[in-house]
Amino acid sequence: MIIKSDILILGSGVAGLTTAIKLAKALPDKKIIVATKDRKEESNTKYAQGGVAVVWNKLDSFESHIADTMRAGDYENNKEVVRMVVENAPDRLQELIDWGAAFDKNKDSKYDLGKEGGHSANRILHHKDITGYEIQMTLLNQAENLPNIELLSHHFAIDLITQHHTEAKQTTFGDPSITCFGAYIMDEQTLAIDTYVANITILATGGAGQVYASTTNPVITTGDGIAMAYRAKATVRDMQYVQFHPTSLYEPGKSPAFLISEAVRGFGAYLRNDKGERFMLPVDERAELASRDIVSRAIDNELNRTGADCVYLDCTHLDQEAFVKHFPNIVDKCQSIGVDVSKDMIPVRPAMHYLMGGVVIDKKGHTSIENLYANGEVSRSGLHGANRLASNSLLEALVFAHEIAADIISHQNKLDKDLPKVPEWNAEGTTDPDEMILISHNRKTVQYIMTDLVAIVRSNERLERALDHLDYIYRDTEKLYKRVTLSPQIVELRNLNACAYLIVKQSLKMKENKGGFYSLDLLD
Ligand code: FAD
Ligand code: SIN
Image 1 (cartoon, rainbow, N blue to C red):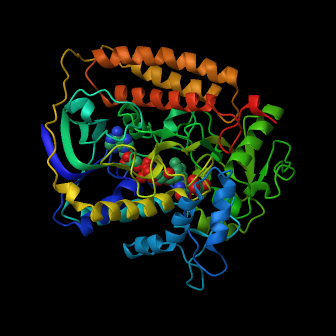
Image 2 (spheres, protein in one colour; image 1 turned 135 degrees about the vertical axis):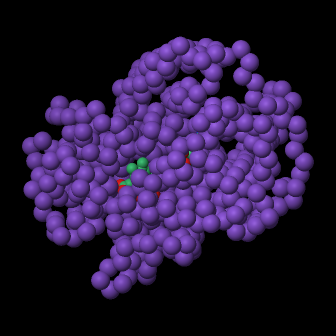
Image 3 (tube, helix red, strand yellow; image 1 turned 180 degrees about the vertical axis):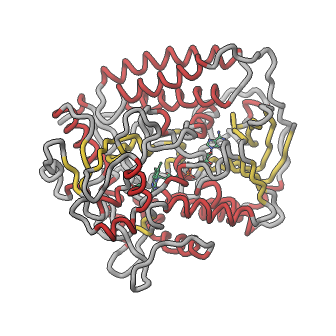
């Protein structure tokens, strides 16, 4: 079936929904489809804890937020983009508040601004320790009340449609003549793959945490958008920069890992090793509040040095009443595994959390492919450089949603252009798989290759070995992909493997250690 819309948005997290709402309000006669592969609320956005960074009062300044973002990013950031995001933050946050998002206030009825690693001021707006849930629900509520948005849950985008499909044209990476005409999307209830044609397509499919065995990201984060864009020959960069969050709750065998927000350290918690020592003190003048790359590496070093499985977050000296008020969800979770934060230390270790790399976009959200925009974690805007500053991700998506919507609105004539004839998906010659174990085994194998060989500390030998293993999985998966009826599982495996390959390949090109990339072969 061919389904036409003016604008097709893939993903219903903060990036997809904010862009959809802005476009739907400004262009009430245009049809916007938001297709999302799981339940409409399932996303990384929903799990965000700490909050959104914003310069909110005179005690803080744009220059200070810019300087902190650049320092955390190891100065690999695009300073123009950093300035644009930081300076637009107050307006975008006010808009979100006007749409109904409630952020915590203090006893003077002023916003209670939290602190996180790498920030030199208190500037994090938050809703207890479930800020993401508050934002996700606010946005869904707005989107569902706009009649020109059609929100399709359990609709899985398989591939972008370009001239490769319409004219069987062969193209090269970054070729500016490549144009996007929509996407092939699977209805997960019927497994039918329909052709969604659109004048503008926006990728908002989020990150790729599931490339690793241990991650704070939910199971949907399989890098689909990055892999689709890469297959369509868009420019993809900085995949070597992977952020490991220092403090995921240590629960052996549990995946995804529950996050213990950085805001807990911002509230005054200490990191201690198994001897009770505060090992961050000699590492960085900011101690526990150094940027994530530095803290995660220090923990990794500590675990290797001591042979322990985890380090500890000590909250026992903090004002317990205030702590419970700020972090009720974290306190509950700890209690559920027998950890009383007022008396016991919380066992933690680093887990994959955020991908700085992705589909390259400019300041208006354009990818290298005509009529294809990207927003959020799927994109690489230049804001984060080599390592994202805490709570700058939700902010990035809010600001770029505004820029993308403004750009589309000012080029509305594009929405009236005729589209070429697009062939329907061809599933000829495929049959149902005999066993799903081949697919699930390969998914786990990719995750363990990456966790064992391409994690916080890398080396050329480990990277080369990972590449060999991934190459085998690639060939095996391609054989399966051509043979079996498509399912979300096989498509996710293919996408995970593509992202893993890109992380390894782009790591091997590095000449210097920066932020979320660190190799033993490049020590000074
Ligand atoms: P997501 O919110 O992940 O949304 C992606 C959407 O795309 C989902 O709806 C998904 O189902 C859909 N999708 C994916 N693939 C397909 C496909 N093939 N077809 C159709 N749909 C698809 N950042 C902060 O700034 N502050 C924080 O406090 C914070 N805390 C965090 C805590 C946790 C535990 C985690 C995991 C992340 C946190 N982050 C935080 C990071 C931040 O939440 C994410 O980077 C951000 O929410 C990404 O938004 P997004 O819209 O780009 O992607
Ligand atoms: C956290 O609450 O520690 C996560 C914040 C982020 O990822 O920016």
